[in-house]
Length: 129
Image (cartoon, rainbow, N blue to C red; front, side, top):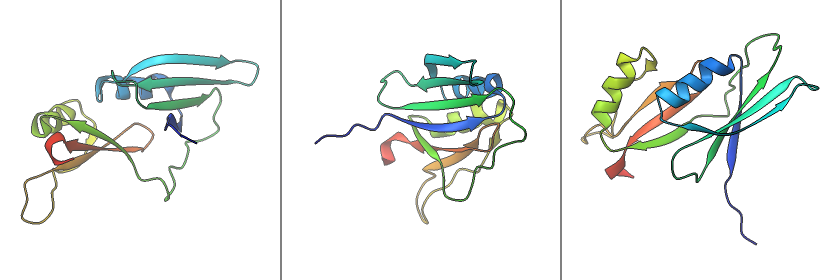
């Protein structure tokens, strides 16, 4: 039996702000949307050009408070060709961006960026994967 990894779901407080982050900061695009007004929530699926994996943003119309990211989930990971340019770009966009890091004695290989709800994404230099 074969399994294909399809998507990961995160709950967001401000759908438009989250979509702006994933579109502008990470180049994802909306591939489909499902509205469920009778249950007061919307699902938006975002992916890259290859469409191998999706992030599902779940937006409940009236969340009572911000969601807790929790201590079990760590991060998404994205690969980029020019790590330094990406890092500078994300800093210039005003997002919460960590330092460039690498293993001891090696060049920087990654950094983290945080979305509006506190979910982190690791940005990895392509040639190190």
